[in-house]
Amino acid sequence: DADVTQTPRNRITKTGKRIMLECSQTKGHDRMYWYRQDPGLGLRLIYYSFDVKDINKGEISDGYSVSRQAQAKFSLSLESAIPNQTALYFCATSDVGQGETQYFGPGTRLLVL
Amino acid sequence: AQSVAQPEDQVNVAEGNPLTVKCTYSVSGNPYLFWYVQYPNRGLQFLLKYITGDNLVKGSYGFEAEFNKSQTSFHLKKPSALVSDSALYFCAVRVLDSNYQLIWGAGTKLIIKP
Image 1 (cartoon, helix red, strand yellow):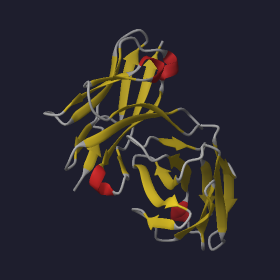
Image 2 (image 1 turned 90 degrees about the vertical axis):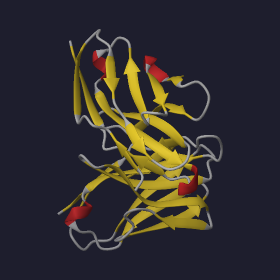
Image 3 (image 1 turned 60 degrees about the horizontal axis):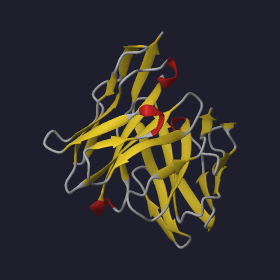
Image 4 (image 1 turned 180 degrees about the vertical axis):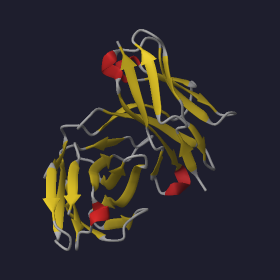
């Protein structure tokens, strides 16, 4: 969905480095999510935010932190990257309403050496 | 524990034939059910959802899915497959008491052969 953008699209980093993945949306949605995708495991929720002042841990938050700078921006940080954080990371947004369909960004492919 | 299963890692179908991608779920409460598709090097795209009402839901690109409460299934179908349908398909479920989080299946790779 072009209304949800992620930067960078690809990133190679070294073990122990701090990195930040950024997500911006123009859909006007209040709710934002960070997922990681690993082959054969589907998507796993890292953090989610229902508004600027509401941030919640997901299924696999250890080793990650987030910042909701504005309604439209939600950043994911890896404070000290490790190789098993190599994955495809997706940001998603949803609006409050029936079903709350989530809309996804194009993903960031992260390789930790 | 609440879960979603996509029992087939891969489904192979000849172009023009009907296709089915299976999804079953185990959740408490009334579920909201979703299908998403992921094309290579792309994000996930929403295909369709079931909230309430008619058990047969129609979505994008000619796909449809049937909610079967007794079998706790939500299989994705298309009457005539196209090569361009080749992608990774994910089923997801939301339960109202889960703080609106989605429970995701592991994904099924659909390969349509010319």
